[in-house]
Image (cartoon, rainbow, N blue to C red):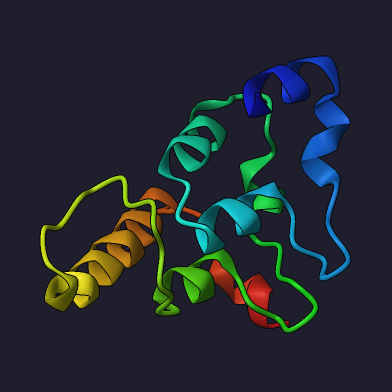
Length: 109
């Protein structure tokens, strides 16, 4: 669905909710691996701009990846609840690695 929306309305990449979260921040916050991968692959997305966005609390995608939350959906299933932290670390590292080459200093300005 995200792919179709972005193909029909490319400017939708700039849309944000009431908390100033764009699609990338929402994907990171909600651990939506497939949406995040789609955004990474899409060559029409100005990654240097979109990936530097922060919400109204100045949280970046990496901040959301580092936040521990309880989720029903885990793209990398881990069999026991005791391994929740392992999942959170894996998610954080995935987002951190995927944004290589993007200057995050702008997130803090």
